[in-house]
Image (cartoon, rainbow, N blue to C red):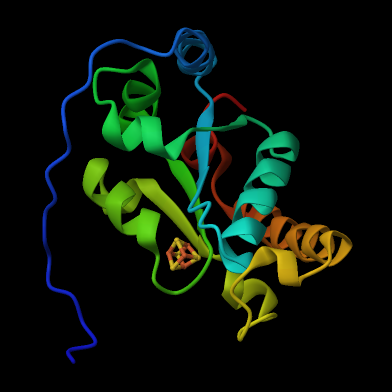
Length: 167
Ligand code: SF4
């Protein structure tokens, strides 16, 4: 079996309406010129650590805020999508080298606008584990903290006005 996937597209069904809370939140982030922070949020331990780390990064990084990747990707008329697509920079934390959501985000915006992190490369734990329930919660949180600290350290090295609008 070929271990590589060529570029491909998938069709997404149309949808009507908007999430009222998501609209209010995203419009506020646009007004404040905050940088979106997204995570792959996969259900395995790697995705869960990425999700927890993204929450910590967004809470602590100046000018950063969590974005909903699914609404940004699949509800193109939403303010969430408008925010993410229009941001000068986005921070994307994927759970592993497959970069599932980073690969989409780079197409949705532009590769140079995405500051991408592979959380597994930053912690290198639980390589043979799938379910997050097989790792105690305290360890999940401790590992996410390690990842978040590494991400925040890298972001602090970037040029603030370019990487973190709103700071
Ligand atoms: S990047 Fe890795 S952890 Fe995240 S959704 Fe893809 S396969 Fe799962």
